Length: 293
Image (cartoon, rainbow, N blue to C red; front, side, top):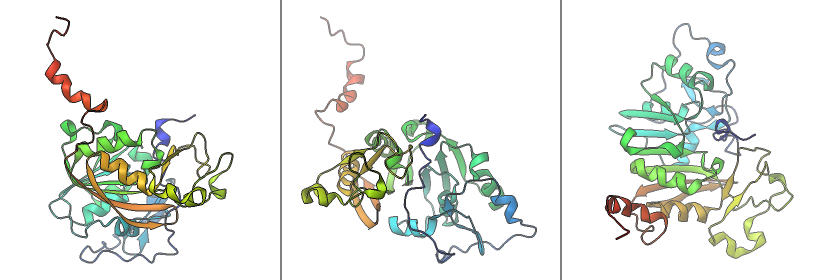
């Protein structure tokens, strides 16, 4: 049965693999030395690690998602001094801790997992970190509660959502500056009826024009990667148009295999004018009026 705990299972779809530990650290953000008495087994044991990140010099989280490389692909600045950062779908927390390492004034890790079970609290303790963990879903983001952020990370989450456009709207509500998105895309991974992702074909093979048509392929079961937590696979155009409609100026920065990285900035949103969803702006104006007279 599908449940909220599976929404973020996601950082498991194909991402760049890391043979050994070749990814360099960010210049000016030195990795701390291994502390006296540190025992790797005590940190790593019993946790399902998805992220690959240098905790201390030469000591890496044993996951397969290369944090430094993905942040390079989305174009995250090396220097985040003075920035307020939100990491949506933080999971193990490596992206959050990396932002702190890059000098961010405040970092909020926002996710659905129990931080005691995901390894987040272990990392926070061993790093003596000030990153704050907030339990919640992207659908519950509220600027009245959390405020707005200069930097928002949304990495490896989009295709796990039943309501991706609602998520884009909620992200827009808490983004004051830039949004960084990394996701599965179907441009080279269109799944035909009755098939799985191992037999996927390029979208252009169905029809070349489809590359320029916003398409969200729905996964009713486990078609994508034998993973029932995957719900929708967008093509690159769908990501650009969907987030554009939410009030972002968004650009594709990098595409590799079945993944793509985007950077977006907040712009005035006009797409809702005259639409059903846009009518909620009228509610405060109608409050208290007697419309039956």
